[in-house]
Length: 246
Length: 120
Image 1 (cartoon, each protein chain N blue to C red):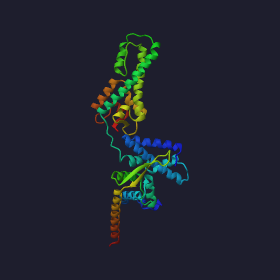
Image 2: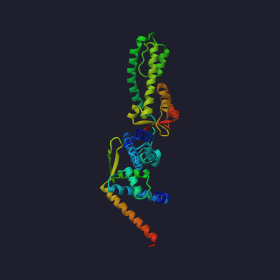
Image 3: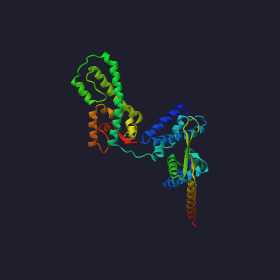
Image 4: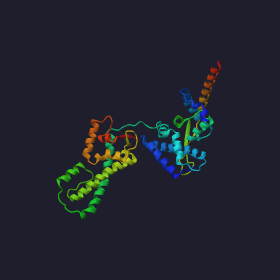
C-alpha cells in the first residue's frame, strides 16, 4: 500500500534520526535502514487497512512507532543487537583523516586562489612587498599558497575566502554527513557525547580552531595531556562532541 | 480481548515463559510458509488471542539470532514500487530439526507440569 507524501517524509526523517544515534558500518546501516522502514510501513499499513483507508498516513506510522516502544524501542529491537559499542578515537586515525582533508582543501584552495587572482588583480592596486603583518597572518593560517607580491587587499580577500572555505568544508560535511571525506576514508564519525548527530552549531564550535592551524596543534596537545581519557580536544569538550570509529 | 489475556498479569513468571516461547513461536510460523517480520508479530498476537503478547523488541532479535544460527534464511522482496521492500523469512532443514527439538522439549515440560498439578 502506498504512503502519503507526508508519511514518506516522516518515515525517512524518523529512520535517519534513529540511526544517527548509533555508530554503524555502512553495510549495517543500509540493512537496518531497510528493516526499520519495512517494519514501520508494514505496521502502518495494517492500521490503515483496519481503518478502511487505501493509503498509509503519517498517523499510522506514528502509531506503529509508539507501539514498537518509540525510537528507543526500535533501536533496542533493530540496532543494539547488531551495533558495535562506541569506540572513541584518540590521535593516529584523526591525524590521517585531517591530512586527507587538508590535501583536498589544498587542491580546492589553489584553484580558488588562482581564480581570485585572475578575476580581482586588475581591479586592485598597491602591488609591492607585503607588510610583515600579512606574512605573520599567513604563517598562522597556511591554507593554500601565499604570494607576498600581490596587492595587500587581494591577499586579505584570499585570506578571508580561504578561512570561509576551510570552516565551511569541515562544518558542512560533519553536520550534514557526520564526517568529512577524510574521516570517511579512515572510518571515523563525529557525534555528540549523547550519540545524537552533531548540529551545524556544534560542528562550527569544534572546527573553528582548524582555520588557525597552530591553534589546532595547541588544542590537540591539550587533548593528549588533559583529555586523553575522554579522547576530546578542548573544542570537542566545548561542543560536547567525540570522534568514533564507525 | 487483551484485557482478559494472561499477558495482562505480566508478572515475572509469565514474562519468563513468554520470552522462552518467542523462539518456538517464530520458528513455527516461518515453518508453515515464508513470512515477514510484522506478519509474524501480528500472527502470534492473533493466533494466541493476545496471550503471547509479543513485542518488536523480542521478535526481531529472535529472527536475527535464528538467522545467525542458520535455522532460518531471509530474502528481501519488492512488494510494490515506491514502498519499502519486505524481508521474508523461511525455515531451513536444520531449522526444522531445531523446531522439532523445541516442540518435544516444550511438550515434555508442559506434560510434566500438568502431571505435577494433577498430583499424579
